[in-house]
Image (cartoon, rainbow, N blue to C red; front, side):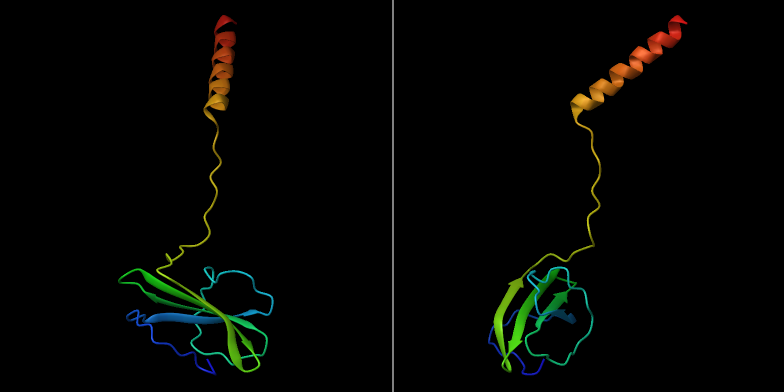
Length: 116
């Protein structure tokens, strides 16, 4: 990034990293960013998300910042964020009451068939 962010917090080695331009009106927390670009030209008024990860220790650092007037503003970061494995797929479930009704109906149809 240019200008390069500076700091004194030492968190260890994060060999995997990525940077993404998420646009001017981004309101998320950068958890979904998976880009692997290592460099991007700064655009005025745009928000950027960066992630750094160490797969061996399962550590992850997320950074979010907006470039305004040549300086980084609204800089936030989160450390030890679990790595995401993709979107979770909802699994439909049936309440116990609904299961009881289905079993009862199946039993009634079975008795009806036996009597015929």
